[in-house]
Image (cartoon, rainbow, N blue to C red; front, side, top):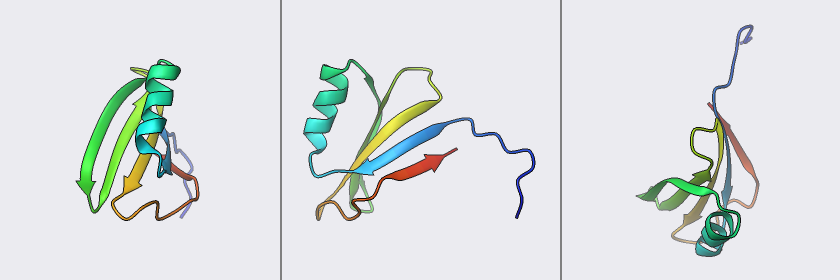
Length: 78
């Protein structure tokens, strides 16, 4: 499949972590970014979306109820 006229409108960098609360504290309280959204218990995952309001990019951090299941950096492009 070829995408000849593809334009991404949002970019989200997602990463699992076992230091969920510490990550939120660093990015929100330390760097001054905002918590844009949050989800809980979605197939065993909790997550937080952090970034600048009205920006087309943001960070997503997740934790699994059984610990971090995937140490790799995930990129989600919308």
